[in-house]
Length: 310
Image (cartoon, rainbow, N blue to C red; front, side):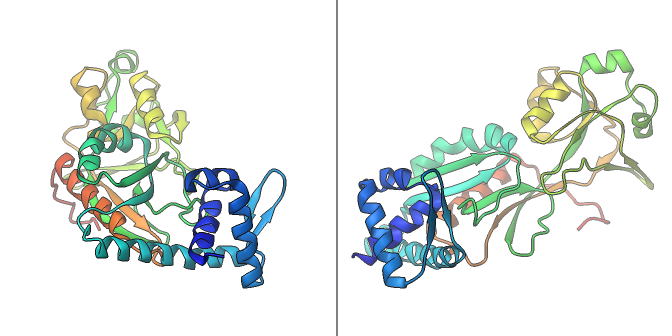
C-alpha cells in the first residue's frame, strides 16, 4: 500500500462524500480507492468510514484522522511547491464559501485576473448565505459579513462595509417617503427582514444623527435568508431595506432604488475571512486571502468608524 495514495484517497472520499466522486477526481478506479481505504483501515486498526449502499459517513476516529491527514497533505504540497522552484505559483484545490451578493458583484467579476495570476489554483466556490461548518463541509475558508462569534475560528478582518437605507420608487409612491426612521414603524410602512443564518432571526438596525439614536425593528412584509433575494425584494417594492453600498450602487444608478435618511449613519458591517486554527494555512490559501483583501480595498471606501464602534 502506498500510504500517500491511501491518505489522499481517504481525504477525497471524506470531502466528496462518495467513493465514485473521489475516484473520478483522483483519476483512479472506484475499486482502487476502495482497496486503498480498506488497507488503510487494516493498517490503523480502526474504522474510518461507515459505508452503506447509499451513503458514506466519516466516523469519529475517521474525522480525527482526516484533520491530521489534511495538514500532512497541505504541508507536502507546500514542500513540493517550494522545492520545484514554483513558490510564486501555488497550486491545488481551494474550497471557499462566500455570500451570494459578494460573489456575484465583486469576486466573480474579478476572478479572471486571479486565475491569470494563479492559473494552477482550482477554486471551488460555494455561493450561499447559509451557515457553513468548515470541517463538516470540507471548506478551507469562508467570507462572512458581521461579527465572527465562533471562538473556534480564526477571523481576519478584511473590510468595513458602509450601509445605507433604500426603497424602490414604486414603494415610495404607494407609502410615501419617510422623513424620520421612526416612521418605518408606523402606518403602512414595511421593512424587508434579512434572517441571520446563525440565529434565524431578523436583526434591527440602529441609525444615528448627532446625539440621536433610533433602533428600527419595523414590520416585515417579507423575511429572506439570501442577499440576492433580499436585494430583489427591495427592487420589487416589497419594503424598505438596509444594504451595503456595493450592493445598492447599480440599483441606485439605474433608478431602481432610492436612498433614504442620507443625513443619518449606520455602523458599518465588518467583513471577515475565517478559517479553522488547526487547518494548515497553505500558500494557495494565503495568496487567496491576500487577493481578497486587496480586492475589497478597491471596492470599499475607507471610512471612519463611529466613536462608539468596535
